[in-house]
Length: 105
Image 1 (tube, rainbow, N blue to C red):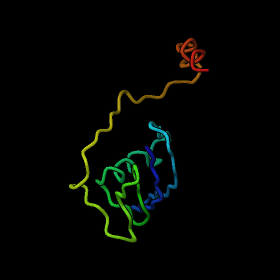
Image 2 (tube, rainbow, N blue to C red):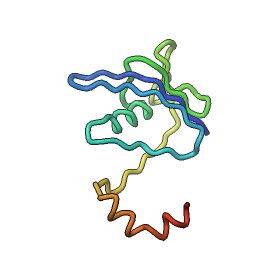
Image 3 (tube, rainbow, N blue to C red):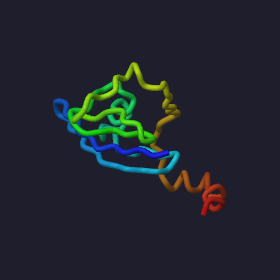
Image 4 (cartoon, one colour):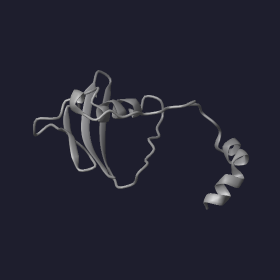
C-alpha cells in the first residue's frame, strides 16, 4: 500500500500545502487545531477539490490537476474513524502506557 500527496488548497485565511509519500499501511496525521488535518482528509476522500497537485493511493490516481481527476462518486467507499480526540499531557500518557511503550521498544 502506498500514498503520494502533493496538493495545495487555499481558502480565505487558510492555505494548505502538503507534500508526502508513504509506503506504510497505516499513517497518522497530527497537528494543532486549524493546521489542516480535516481538510487533508476531505481532499483525499474527494469531498473537497484541491486547487492543484495530485493524490495517488495504491498506484491509483484519485486527483491530478494536470489531468481529469476522478470524481468522488466513482471512488471506492472508505471510512475514517476518529475517536475521542483530546489533548493529554505526554507525561500522563507515558505513565499510563509505560508497559505498552516498553513492549513496543
